[in-house]
Amino acid sequence: MVNNLTPAKTFIVSLIGGVTTGMGNGSVFGAALMCALGRGPFEDWGGMGMQAFDPTTFTGFIDWCMIVFGIAFMIIMLITLNRHGEIEAAAARQAG
Image (cartoon, rainbow, N blue to C red):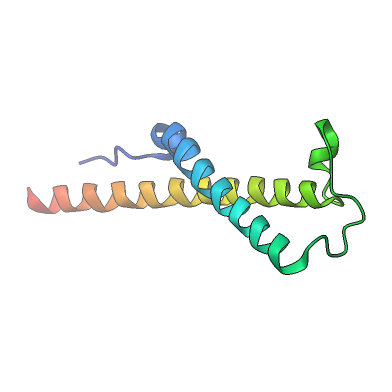
């Protein structure tokens, strides 16, 4: 049997599931950081538009954490789905 869960076939599912979960975890990380540090070393809270993505501001740091966590979880989803497909294909070959 062939692996039907290749990264090309599971990209959209991984994108939605991984980025949603990862960005949620990134926001929790940012909230925990905010509770622990307050503003900490950040001179500026952040702002609207592109200033919200400036990693030297507090909001920008949290936004970048969310983006990094989202991409990391998407990659993890792609790897795990591909490996699951390989295991299923090997089991199907072994069964008959």
